[in-house]
Length: 566
Image (tube, rainbow, N blue to C red):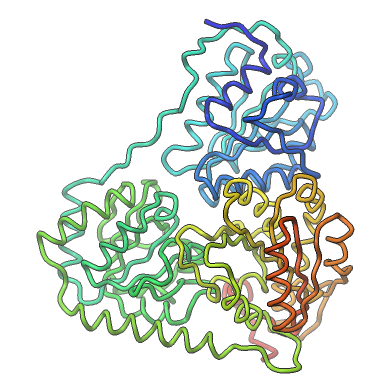
C-alpha cells in the first residue's frame, strides 16, 4: 500500500494507462490534479479555449490512436459544455474518459455555486457516468472507467471527482493495481452460427459485403479483404466508414447511404446476400428501409454488440463477435464448404462500377472562369492530396461531398462526426488527431458556418504549434438547411444566409498562416505552402452558394410536400 495525495493518484492512474495529453480549460475545481502534473514530461494538460473544443480534441485523439482520449473540466458550465463531445464519442463508439472536478460533497444538494447533477446529465449520452465516492476509491474508479471505455463496443465514461476528496493529502491505495486495464476478448462467434453463415454464403448468387465501423476499430481490413477475395464478393462501406477498406482494393466500389456513391447503391441492389461486417446498418446507411438494402436479400450480420443484431433489418444469421476473428473463421469455413459460383461475373461487375464511379468523378473538373463548386474543390484535392494524409470532416453540405469524392487508399484515415451530424467538430478534432499521429499530415475540411463554432481553437493550435491544415469552403450560408428551403419552401430563405470575415486573415491574426484560393491554381499552390509551413494554416475557398445537395431526409421530414425548385 502506498500513500500519496488524491490529485497525484489521479495522475498516476492516467500515466499507467499511457495517457499523453489531458484536454480541458483550467478550473479551480481540479487544481490538485493539475498541480500533480507540474514538471512532468510524459503527461501534459492541454488548455483549450472552450470545453467543447477540449472534448473534440480528446475525441480526435481517440479516433487517431484507438486509445482513450482524456479530458478534465470544471463543474457546472465546464461540464455541460462537454455534453456534445461525449455524445460524439458515444455515437462513434470512441473510447473516452471525461473527468469533472465536482463540487465538494458537503455542498451537494443545496443549490451551491455551479452545482449540476453531472452523473445524471451525462448518463443518457455516455456509456457510463459515475462519481468517485471517496478519496480512497479514486484509483479503482478511474481504472474501471478506462476498462469500460475501451472494452466491447467502446464509448465515453464520465467520472465526477468531488473537489474536497481531491484535496486529501494522504490517500492509501494499492499501487499494484496500476497498469494496463483488461481488454475485451476477440470472440470469433458461435461455431454453429458461423457454419450456418458460411452455408448461406456458399449458396448465394451475388453476395456483397458492407464494411462498417467494427472493421475500423478492430483494425480488421486485411481479414475482410481476404474473405471478400475468397467469396469474390464486392465490397461497400457503411455511411461515414469509407476508410474501413482501402479504396484501391479491386473489389471495393464505394460508400453506401447518404452522400454515398450511386454506384455502391447500384451494386447492393443486386445482392441476394448482404454480409454486414461490424455495422449496425443504421440510419444514414440504410434509412431503415429498402432503398439501399434489397427487401429479398438475406442478411448475415456480425456485430460486437448483441443489441444491434437484427435491430434495424431482419437477419438470416446474426453473429456476436469481433469482426477480425469472425472473418478469419468464416474464411476457413468458406475454404472448407466452397465459395459461391459466378465469381468472375461479380469481379467484372465490381470493375465496371469502379470505372463508372471514376468516370463520374473525373467529369466534375473546374469550369474556367466560374466560382468553384464543392465537387470541383474535391476534384482538385484528389490530385494534390498527400497519400498518407489523415482527413477530418464535419457534417454539413460542403463537407458531406467528401465521403464520395476523396480517395482513402490507406485504411483508417478518415474521422467524421457520423450519426451525431455535428458541425463545428472538424477543426478541434483534427488537432487531437494530429497530436495522436504527429508524423502524418492532417487536413480538416469545414464549411464556413461550422468552422466559426470553434474558431477560437486556432489560438490553441498556434500556442501548441499543431500543424493542421484547415480547408474552409465558404458559401456564406447554412447549406444543409438552405437546401431544404430551396427545394421544399419555394426559396423562402430565413436566416440561411450569413456573413463571415476573411477567414484566412483571421488565421493570420491568430498567428498561423492563412491562404485564399479562388481557383484550381491558387488551391494547388496554397495546399503545397500550407503543408510545408510547419504550423497551423487555413485555406479559405469561396464556393458557389447556389450549389446545394438535395436533402437526404426529404421524404422523412416533408412527406406531404413536393419539390418546388430544381
